[in-house]
Length: 455
Image (cartoon, rainbow, N blue to C red; front, side, top):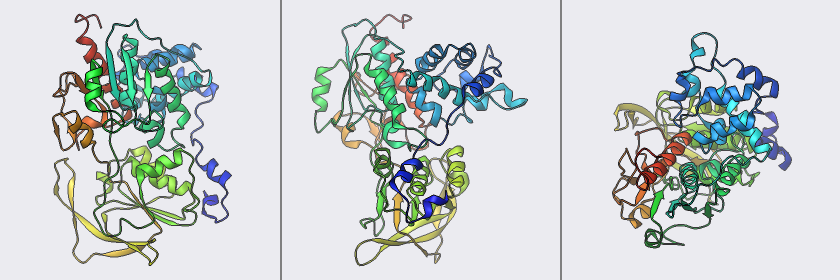
């Protein structure tokens, strides 16, 4: 990507850099790949999918030319299946379980899933209808993968559903938090529209606790589903965080999704603190904005990083440098308050933390300075404590406590799903997992309103 390292980089080049990297399968490639599938009767790929998509069925429908049927099979199980076809770690899930791993190579399930859902998007397909109304209402807080999935299922079951979303547009992580060159916003917006077409009301720019109260929602709806995800990136707690040039990774990626493609990064040196998927996104966005050098600093080693393997490989291909066992001590600025460097410690690994990863410890006298122009913080996200407290729900460290069978909270009429119920080191906080939990919350509510066995 040599064109990113010139001061004369144009806005049109920046736009091009944020176009989707993977063009997807051609018609011929999709047909050939679909015909490789063995259509296993007891398919391990279905078991490996958190949403239990009938993978042999949707692939067989591709082979027979029934693309709408294929897309409907996918989206029936996974209401954000178009997004997941691009961002799921398929090599660890469905493709990792494919029986062809033992002989040749696995079916490209993710790419075939994208092929079908892309067809549905291009052809503006409406895949589902709302169910007959049963006279019950549900407020869903958060329009991300978990909230949309819950709302979609409830609408199909006949509930009156209203989603409250703090951001300007619905879609949550898929709309704002995953880089455009992996997941274009248009894909997320199509999934949102599929939910809207089921008579689901989506109220955006509305923060519960500010624009409407928890009490009002509790009084006006039969049930509530809390699917608010996570909040902002926390402070590093070091000197210099207030300097010009220090960025929150979530807000940084969100700006690029809204096509706010700043030329301030052209030719600059950037460091990203953290080694999760959001850190990778911050680093690869910086490369595409024209940064000359991008480093990820991580206080542990490659073995402890939380980013998916395919994200890690993607970043390395973009030329991102990884500095393991490195942690920030302070951020250095000039007399004008602009970032000029970052002082770091070398780290060593000690005993394991509660999440099983070994605890990093600073090596005495190991400090060194890296010259940088920008620092991107990507060390996880804070919890929605105020929101949780507004509903007076039982929580531990900002993690809403639920019955893991029913996803019911300490308030019987409130259910919770997605990131808001994931604790550190507990479970897999993936888009596909959030989608399944949204469905589970919907079914748990429905079981309270219909005879057992009729769902």
